[in-house]
Image (tube, rainbow, N blue to C red; front, top):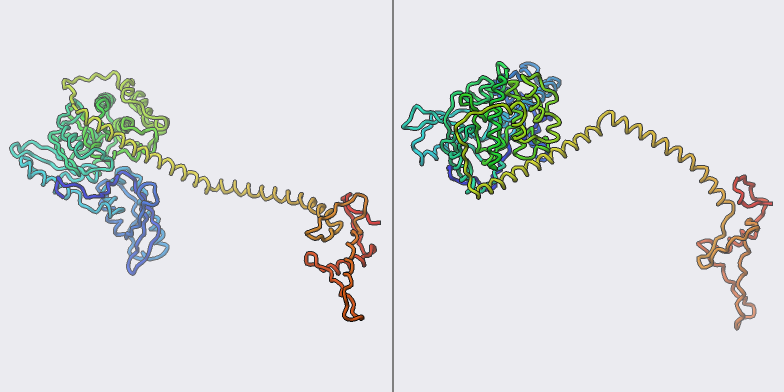
Length: 578
């Protein structure tokens, strides 16, 4: 794709910071090896998941590539004999799951390109270094004074951002660094506004912002050139790393963990807060503060990568602050990220988890006070302080900054409005993601509680109590039903025709004797007879409710009181048979 070519229609802009989770679901044995079926999921939605099949040799290759990080990862050992036994395969499956869990728990490893390619080959199969080199070569056709010295392979953590060491042809001793980055999911500026703002960056002058030498952009990417600094970033200073080394090698497993001096913490912290306040006052969105984005120039900190928010790239600490719904603006994101940076400056390493329940001993309680206001449970739950509030805290309020460089960054009114709208869109996506994560966490917590052993015991006890209560109620209702049945069955109700209503009962009369039957119909009048011996034909009794009336009359006439069985009942309304 040419440098000025538009991205393909319908291009999916993935958020590379959304965590991937992997579960080894099953295994299948073939003729000479075993394959492991892994379910991979991006984020919290089970719909965004897929299956991959990997052999042990694939895990071994991944582990070899990750050795550059200097970590002792728990990959199950090889076994040449008996490696097809069912028990061994089940044990190895558990070991591989633990191996993946350890990698996922490491913030740096979980974002590295090696792991993304292993778990999601469909979205991470491209060679981004080659793509970046092609784009840069297209750019150099129109700008022949620049020349690539060498690629700076993997010096950053981003998969879709690449770096090259540069030089100017007529100044061969001066070294520069070129950064190329693809668009991200939070790019909301129009193509025209995006290119205009990118080209404004070289005009930004501030004592604590690292100058941009050259900047240009297309509809699909941006390219910036800065002076190469041999001393490296603030993170290189903390970890005592070489700037040109790969990111995994520099920061995953430092040889010596040691924080900075108190005066360095105070000075660097004050400088970083001053530039954040400058950007906030200008309405320029940032949201990408971390120690590797702060260049060291002598004893001065200078902020890097102002273009990231314009490109729509997600923040390094995004997996942290998406967990807290009160961190919902880019200003509060910057303050929270400053807390991470301050922790790293103080202790020489990032926090194990966020929020931080308790802080280790620090050079000053004033440091702990700032950390508590940005990383504690209460701060993450209730919201971040403003940058102005942090500047007033004792750790930074007495720091005197001496600089002669006057800040200057003129943004046209039309572009300011475009930046404001883009910032609101970025914050809206953040809020939506935080809402989904919050709802998922509540649902997971409820399901976990519902399926817990304690909850199951509680439900069993309630079910027993309910069963006993129902049994008692049934036993109490049974005598009442029996007495009601006896009172209703003491006398048989006469069959009635639908056309004749049931006569009301008369008090004091015995119901043992049924009411007299209706008189038989009168014989029909004698008509003219053809034979003197012919008798009139009697009318047959009619059926009532399917019962022959003649049988009913016969039963009544043959009724005898002596055949009745004496019944004992508590119902005083029952008939008395004398």
